[in-house]
Image 1 (cartoon, rainbow, N blue to C red):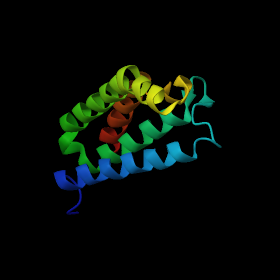
Image 2 (image 1 turned 180 degrees about the vertical axis):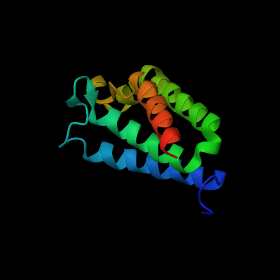
Image 3 (image 1 turned 30 degrees about the horizontal axis):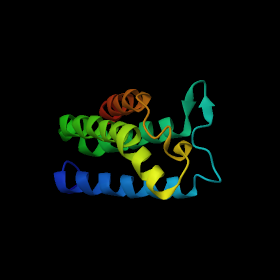
Image 4 (image 1 turned 135 degrees about the horizontal axis):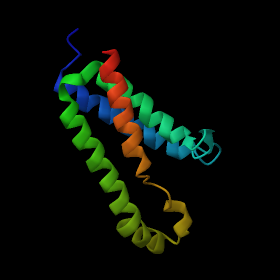
Amino acid sequence: MIIKNNLNYLFFYYFLMTFGAFVIILFEKNISFNNKVIGNCTYWNMIHFMSRVVIMKNFFKYWHIILLLDLFWELCEYLYEENIAPIICKYINLSDDYTKNIYDWDDIFWNILGMVIGLIIS
C-alpha cells in the first residue's frame, strides 16, 4: 500500500490526531477523559496507546521519528502548562485549574507500549 511507510502521510496522521485531540478537549466539559478505565489507566492513556498501535502498524519504518515527535509533544505540553498557560489565564481571567493536567509523563509509557505492540503486529 502506498500510504504505508510514507513520511508525508505520517505527518498528516499526526495533524489529524492533534485536531482530534482539540475536538475532544472542546467536548471534555461533559466527558472526563481522566476517569480510570482499568487500574490506573485513563481514557487518555488508552487513546495514546491505541493511536500508537495504529501508527506503528502503518509507519513502523519511522519509529525513531515517531518517538522523537512524541517526546517533543509531551515536552511542549509540559512547558505550556508550567510557563505559558498561567500567563494566558491571568490575562483572560481564567482559573489556573482550567489548564492543569494537560501533560502526563505516563503518556510516554503508553506511547512506547503502543509502539511496541504495533511493531509486533505489523
